[in-house]
Image (tube, rainbow, N blue to C red; front, side):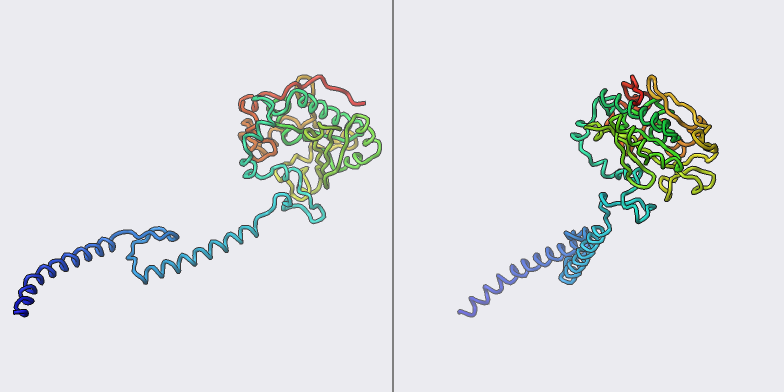
Length: 340
């Protein structure tokens, strides 16, 4: 009787169990089919069309570990190759001059300048039209005029270069986003800068000079204005670049002038230089128009008339009025003072 009872239960339950098992198997196979056509996303490797089986998972983990090791090695390499901008030197500089060339140091790396926050820029911008406030702008015009007059007094031929020459040609004065003056001299006249009489004249006019390195001097006013304004004086050399006046060590290779521009001797050794209007009543020496425009084309490109200073020491973002920056000059520009 017991066996009959068990047999009868087996006969009833077996089909139900078989049906349930068959349904489970079908669902499992359907799941496997979906996984075979789906995309498995590994947290390190991204998406891979694969089944997450034990062998595949182990391969993914191994590849992830290899990528981690590669990323760490790459990070160490980048850190080792990154140059500290405070120690960077121009590639053309010689070992005896560890200070970077001023015109290269002035670039200050475009990437770094783009990270300057707006708060810093607002504190250094005087108005939407120019970087310098009225007192500073006038002081810069006066500084450039006095330094030029003292150079002439000591028989040092000079002419505007860089942004100062661009300002003379395009703006007829100091470019509104600028805060310094750039002059070139000839190397043979540089010895006059180191005389006691020249330094004494600087002192009488509340100025001081220091030589940054070979062929480069800065002249600044005494006091707090010296932290803001200065005249950069760069020596150009004959005989280094064929038929050109240029800087030593291939510094700023596009900054060249025809050697014929300074073919004379003595105080008038650059007879081709002409006076360019600079501000309301001032002037600066500069090359004749044809040479001057060729210079700005070589240095600033064929769109030199458009303000662009991403690769200079004078960020254009400090001036909100770009049209003004391209057509007008910093003000006030006078009155000028004669040196003592």
